[in-house]
Image (cartoon, rainbow, N blue to C red):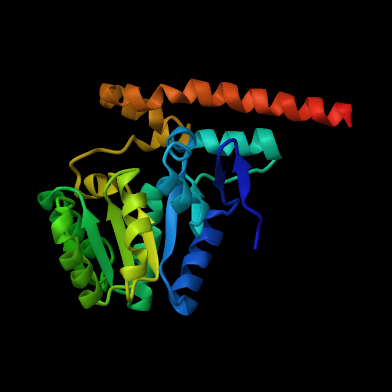
Length: 252
């Protein structure tokens, strides 16, 4: 197994999309517990260390995808690693295709009711044979959580997609993973159900090829500036860390 790379205050698994999917295949075939899949991106470098429960969820995660172009660049600068970006919003399709092939049931939890329902319909249309074993919108009260867990377990789904947004989805997993009886793969997918349902548009392929999807989303949703303002700071921190390591190497 390849060693996880440390990127400032977070981590990323140096896996290609194919290797990551093989890891999922292994979890589904041989796993005896839930295995978590989260996204590694620059924003997480600031949010993860600030919350002990969130930090624990990331530290103990089974697969951290190189979701953001910033993390891919940082891995190259700090470790000389040439990573392939694996967006969680695309990896969900890879998992659903595998689920349809292997006959593994899927449970969708999160987003608004109409989005959740539409996403389930779109996924079934895209992947004939895919079993949506159950679904639930993201507006479940804490006193209703036990009932939701029972629904997930009763569905016997082996794959759970958490579309609660970060850090809510990672914290939910950390708190409830031991109650999940049949789930073997759990991916935090953020707002991906909105893009699947069509209520939020992904960047055109041209922007994606240039790794500028983040900029397209910023133009489309100016309110995201509050989250993306950390990107320049992340870049500066990576360069400072690179210079520190060079200095240490010269001194030794």
